[in-house]
Image 1: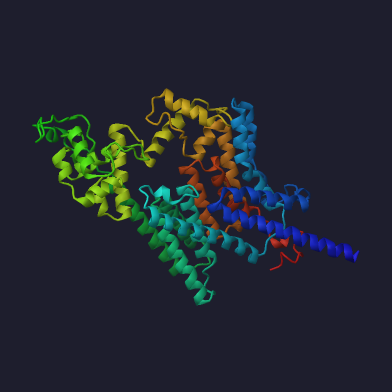
Image 2 (image 1 turned 30 degrees about the vertical axis):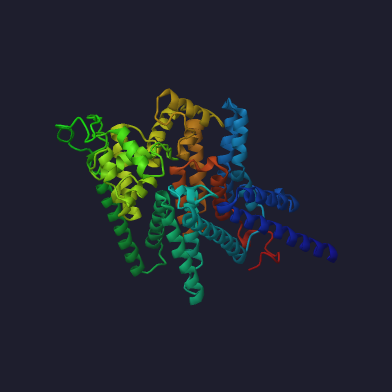
Length: 536
C-alpha cells in the first residue's frame, strides 16, 4: 500500500509537470507563435487524459461551476449553428478554430489548483514573451523602417499584440510591483513597464491606446468603489478620472468642426492652363481637401507625373499596400502645401518633402506633429472624407463604420435563425457586392464580435452569447482581482472592435485569460490540495 501511495504521488507530480509545461508554452505562444499554441493544447490534453480529468466534473452545486457551464454556451452555440449552415467544410474549420473556448475551460477547471508561485511563473512567461516581441518590433523598425506600423509585428496581428502589451502592463503593475517588493525588484518592473508603454506608442495602435486608457479607468473605478482604500486615494482616483473625461471631451470637440471648405470661393475664377501650357483638371464638386485646400483643382497629372519621376526613385504609379498610388499621396501632399498639382508644384517640394511622400505621408504638417496629434488629425480627415465622398478604403476606422452598417443590415435580414456557423464570411461578401459597397471584393467582415454572432445565430444566439459573457463574471465577482478586471475590459473591448473569436490567436487569448481566472480551482477546494506541487 505504501509503494502504491508513493507511485500515485510520483504520477501526480509528473502529470503536474506536463500541465505546467502546457500552460507555460501556451502563455509564450500567445504573442509569438501559433504553432506553440497548438502544441501546448496537445500537452494539456495529454495531461488531462493521464490525470483522468473527466472524473472531476462535478454537478452544478456552486456558483463557480455554474459559471463554468454557462461559459461553455459559447462553443455550444457554434456547434448548434451547424444545422443552419450551407458551407459545412468552412463551418468545421470554424469549429476547429473555436476549440480553445471549449478545451481551455475544461482542462483548467478539472486540473489541480496552482500555487501562487506557479501562477506567477506562468505570468512571467507571458510577460517575457510579450517583451521579446517588443524587441523584435524595435529591430524591424530600425532595420526596415516600414511605412505601415502594422508591419512592425510580423509574428502576430498588430492590434491584438497591442492588447497583449496592455495586459502585460496591468499584470506588472498590479501583481509584480507591490509595496513589499525590494526596491531593486520594483525598479526593474517599473523600467519594464515604461518600456512596454514606449513600445505601445511605437506600434501607433489607436485601439491599443484606447484599451490602455479603459484599463486605467477600470483601475480608478476599482479604487473608488472598494472600501479598503483610504479617502485620499479615492480623491486622487476621482481627480484622474475627471482629467481623462476632460481629455475625451476635448477630443470630441476637436473632431467636430467640419472639414468642408467654402466651395464657391475656392472654385471661383479658376485658371484653365498651367505655366507649361497644359490644361488643368478641376473637379468643382468634390470637397476633398488638405488643410482647407481642395485636392482636385489645378491638376495637370501628366506633367506632374513626369516631374515626379524625374525627382524620385519611387515611380508615380507605384502601388502602395493601402491600395493607393504614390501619385495619390503626392496629390494630397501638394494640396496640403497649397501648391498646384503640376510641374511647378513638384519642383517647389524640398528633398525632405519628397522623402515624406515616398514614405506615404499625405500632409506636410504630419512630420511636425506628435504621433497622437497626427493620428487624431488623420482620423478627422478620414471621417469627413468618408462623410463627403463615401469611400472608406484604406482607413481602418471608417472601414469599420461601413462594415458595421453592412453587418447590421445582414443581421436584420436573418433575425431569428441567423445564417449559420461557417456562412458569415460568404454571406457578408455577397451582401457587400449586392449593396455596391466600396469594400466589395475584400475579405473583410464585421470587425465586431457581437455583430458577427448576431449575423450567424440571430437574436437567440446573441442573447445566449451575452449571457455566457456576463454571468460568469457576475457569479465569480468575488474572485476578481484588480488586474483581471482591467484585463476583462480589454478583452471585451476587443470584441467591439475586432472579430476576436474568429481567429486562432484571438480566441486563444480570450479563452486563456478568462479560463485561467474564472475556472482555475482554488487550493482549498481542490482534491489535489495535498499534492507537493500545489502547496504554497
